[in-house]
Image (tube, rainbow, N blue to C red; front, top):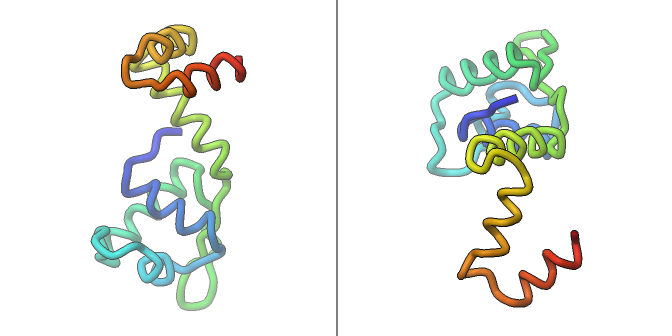
Amino acid sequence: MKLSDAEWRLMTVLWRRHPLTAREVLDALPRGADRAYTTVKTQLTRLVAKGALKETPGGAASLYAPRVGAAQARRSALRGFVDRAFGGYAPLLQFLAEEDELSEADREELRRLL
């Protein structure tokens, strides 16, 4: 599942606390983020369509809650990035091993993890 930066912000709010109304999501967004109610509502609707959120009609406002966990979304995002940028995990690891800015301690930690 591919999420835009704005969608990641909304999902982060909802992973921390849910269910929330669109207004509650808006109020929980960090300062500086797009804080227009109609924009947030549109993004929530898109996240429901993508299957990332579930919407439960309730009284005056719908409630939103995650359908996918943060770990699952991160795995999907990482897999997509690695495939696009490196063509797989082996080329990524080779890139990291050859990276000049990687400290010897970081290289050793990579070796240990592998």
